[in-house]
Amino acid sequence: TFLFCYPRGADGNQETDWQEQLATNNLKSVLSKEVIDAIAASQQETGTLNLDFFRDHPSPSWKTDDLVDHKMNTNLVVDDKAKAQNSSAEHVPLIYKAPKDGSDGHQVDTAAKIARRKLREIRREKRAMDLVRKDDEALVKLENAAIERSKAVDSAVLGKYSIWRKENENENSDSTVRLMRDQIIMARVYSVLAKSKNKHGLYQELQSRIKESHRAVGEATADAELHRSAPDRMRAMGQVLTKAREELYDCKVISQRLRAMLQSADEQVRSLKKQSTFLSQLAAKTIPNSIHCLSMRLTIDYYLLPVEKRKFPRSENLENPELYHYALFSDNVLAASVVVNSTIMNAKEPEKHVFHLVTDKLNFGAMNMWFLLNPPGKATIHVENVDEFKWLNSSYCPVLRQLESAAMKEFYFKADRPTTLSAGSSNLKYRNPKYLSMLNHLRFYLPEIYPKLDKILFLDDDIVVQKDLTGLWDVDLNGMVNGAVFTCGESFHRFDKYLNFSNPHIARNFDPNACGWAYGMNIFDLKQWKNKDITGIYHKWQTMNEDRVLWKLGTLPPGLMTFYKLTHPLDKSWHVLGLGYNPSIDRSEIDNAAVAHYNGNMKPWLELAMTKYRPYWTRYIKYDHPYIRGCNLSE
Image 1 (cartoon, rainbow, N blue to C red):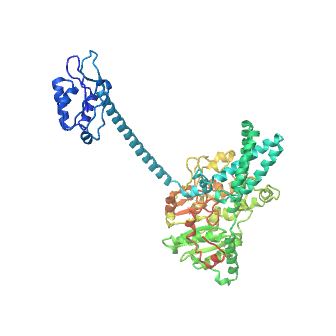
Image 2 (cartoon, rainbow, N blue to C red):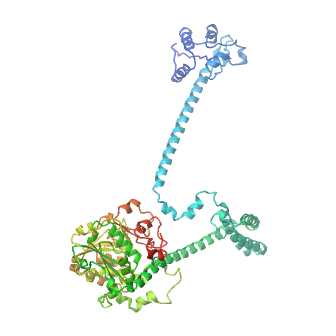
């Protein structure tokens, strides 16, 4: 039963505020139309509703019991039928207050307030539900955004750190291993403190527990790999650590000791990094046994061939300037075969392509035998031995002359120079004598090797050709000698990264912010080369660098200097780099590139190659070939 008392203003007119109006509107959904009409009629007659009105005018939808003494301050009781019809409505208690003048009139003091309070609670609940709904929607949006961002993370990059990721995917996974390793660290700290305080018994006990825990943990990285005695060792170590903490704990001393251990660990990490650098450089510059086996078997079979069967067909194409000519200098038979095979398989007119291969005398027979057994279709191929280039001698070539110098021999070959894995690792890349190999420096002598050609495309042996390359011969170099893809970003691969600008010769002749470019796929205009005496420019700078004061060894720095302001930028789609060191190259960038370059240490023929990039290279190798199968080469 609901009773309301509407106050009047001083002028006798009813003043209903917005809260009372809202309460009335909400009650319409609870009370029947009959009750609402009765309330309205009573208001018109008396202005104020009272209990007597409802007692005299009962509604079929509700009724009241007799009121008890108002001093008992009780609630009206609604009958069962009214409860059933109004089950969704809450009963509002009626609070009566006796008039001050002692009259029998009953006043409703707080019923309207209680109703308004209920409505306010309903509104608050609705607002709270709206806020929760909005929070849920926002959370879903954030989760969806996080999922999209996670798709952009290259799985191969994460794969490099799979061990660490495995340990941290679940904070509770492999907890025993981590706890035991932490115990060993703290035991080492307490053992030092025990020894310094002459607690020899505790020191011996700690040392014994450390040895036991080391044996139980071993090389384990997961709980499943632990020795079965690990739980017992962990409990025993926990007991002795508790004892040590009670006797030796000193926060300041322990923190100092932990810092000292951290510094020692940092030193070990730096040493291991140097060793890793050495080993990766060593691996990158060596030929795997399987490829060495392939070369030796091919060499033996080549020299068993009659002389008349050692010649390639179509030799008349070798000096035809109307055809597409390639220069490839390599001592790796398998790598050279991939370059040739991938180029021919993607060429629109294979019969117009001519390959000029140059290798050393050790691999000359193997290179010939391979392509005699596996001719590149209708294309022309020719193999030469660099050691038969009699014009390439120390009196003409600065690199050969420097190799004969005492200083260079000392730098490269002196027996008493640092030989430990960690010593001088920052220069290991440049200390490898392979950088002085003439196969690397032949790229500066192209007109001397091919005097009758006008243009030639130079290819490194660590590339894969994925599209037809004949469009490169139609590129207008605008009078430049070299066509190459530029590699610099905002500050990456600019001249100051390769050259020593503290030297006045470098500072005077070159811009430190000049953009570098890529060796590995370069179109050279040999006519312009001769006109501008490119080889002479190279000789000048190479001679000045005898003491390695202008740049460290290698062919890119002298190339940047020799072709400075003589290089025409090619579209980046011709040449994508970094497959030998960068694990985060976009897959679409590789797929759209004409040439994919494995520059870096992780060559595709090495075990340390990145698995995700290797298929681009291996698809051009026939692993069922008898020679390849016989040398245990596999994907």
